[in-house]
Image 1: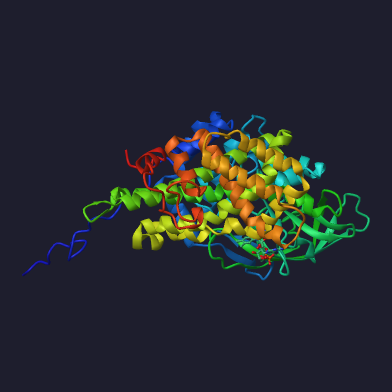
Image 2: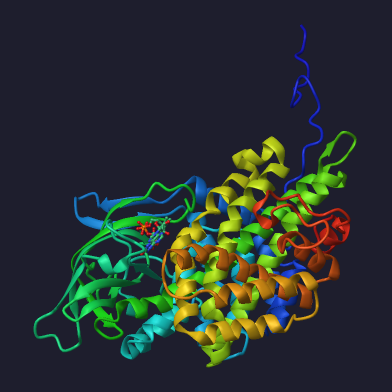
Amino acid sequence: MKTAPAARPHATHEVLNQVPPLAGYDVADDPALLEAAGREGADWDAGRLHELGRLAGAADTQEHARLANEHPPVLRTHDSRGNRIDEVEFHPSWHVLLGTAVGYGLHAAPWADTRPGAHVARAAAFYVWSQAEAGHGCPVSMTYAVLPALRHAPDLAQQFEPLLTAAAYDPGLRPPAGKAGLLAGMAMTEKQGGSDVRAGTTRAEPVPGDTGGAHLITGHKWFCSAPMSDLFLVLAQAPGGLTCFLLPRVLPDGSRNAMRLQRLKDKLGNRSNASAEVEFDGALAWPVGAAGRGVPTIIEMVSATRLDCVLGSAAGMRRGVVAAAHYTAHRQAFGKDLIAWPLMGSVLADLSLESEAATTLAIRLAGAADRAARGDAAEAALLRVALPAAKHWVCKRAPLHAAEALECLGGNGYVEESGMPRLYRDSPLNSIWEGSGNVTALDLLRALRRQPATADALAAELALAAGADGRLDKAIGQLRAGLAGLGAAGPDAEYAARRLAGQITLALQAALLVRHAPAAVADAFCASRLGAGEGAAPGGPGVPFGTLPDGTAVGEILDRARLVPR
Ligand SMILES: Cc1cc2nc3c(=O)[nH]c(=O)nc-3n(C[C@H](O)[C@H](O)[C@H](O)COP(=O)(O)OP(=O)(O)OC[C@H]3O[C@@H](n4cnc5c(N)ncnc54)[C@H](O)[C@@H]3O)c2cc1C
């Protein structure tokens, strides 16, 4: 009797020229990040950053990230007996990711840490851990950002701050006071408007006879992410005008507050995270900040989350270029490693320049936030102008960057298993959150018009790089002329908003690179982004990646970013 031939994995061919998984590496092995974090005062956290970096690059973590996205959250409106429960069920991998983030203090921990640089250390760690999975960063960021706003209600802050800053992930709906740690969200956007929050129709009515300021909230919110959080900042129309309130999911007596989850959004990206449509049917809440001052109060939360949008976009870029470099270093075409072909090298170097500039600026902004939180007015003024500019520009560059990084993997980059489609789908979101492109750019104009100290702080920051590079000097001169011509409000001034956001960001990035990065990086950035001088890329940064001028030190740029296997 004939025996069957031994089973072979593939009957027709050997599997050749496929790339090993990018796993088991230290995500924090990122010179631009480490140097920037050191400059901004967080050297003391380098050991922990590498520990988190190794965790972020581990195969197990990557598997959790995949599972959390392939098994998105499910809404459970009722229990088996028909009682309303309004809970969201997550895959266990979501809890692992979020639990790690909270355990490393990426949420509100730095607000309880008096060490200078605590916010920078947290920003660097957030950047590193976001490269593992971006979706769970949403509740992490919102919890980080809630503190400055919550402090407008000292009694509530005293009660909840220790739990919001505790490095304990304690999921599940229970009375906040009895939990080991809390997460917070925000609910501003309504069906009829998200940018124009003053058009909100949700009402707040004082509870008759209550001396503690309790109000009943009635209305809806159209996007309310991380709805399993313990506390929410909510905007509502109170008798004294639009006011910010703190609304707990569970009341002190253990009953569920009247916050109903209507459905979850079926989203482009950010699929591991739940974003709900909610209704408040007389939900109990307590004011945060003065009546009628809802927008200025919640803006403090918005501003802190904007920093995370920049960090998150920079993290996505780094993840993209590392994946692209890894792939091209292990895949051959036409007899050579892809990375060794000049044009692929140029694409990777260009992606790397964008990534290094984004990282360097994001961590500089985290340094400004750290010092502003400790009372430094000049850094607060710089942040007021640099943050909306960077939020606009860096977050808008991210999808272009992700698309190009994905293409370095050829067809494999288009396939889910590579992780690149998730990176691409997640990439536009930071630009929409916390003020979409136009709104953020208009906010930049508002800052420049109303607070002259912001332009002074920007000028002082750029002056630190004066004389170091002629192209940068010229760009700063053009920016100065643009700012001087801002004039009164009107269509022309508004048209300038996006342009200015780009000019300011590029000038800040170039100034930082000229001062701190290797000459090859700074020179190539100025040559390709500032659009002046011999051999400049046609059209500057608006053109696709991979158009670096002749003579660019591609090898040095890739080495610098540790993108070539050693
Ligand atoms: C995944 C996801 C999660 C979210 N989670 C939350 C959450 O947890 N809490 C929350 O409150 N919100 C959340 N949002 C909502 C988000 O903040 C809003 O979508 C955003 O602020 C824009 O509001 P809108 O969708 O109503 O758009 P609109 O306000 O209708 O704006 C539409 C477009 O017009 C532009 N625009 C608006 N005004 C002007 C103007 N004056 N001049 C020029 N252009 C203008 C905007 O930039 C935008 O591009 C989430 C959104 C998404 C996608």
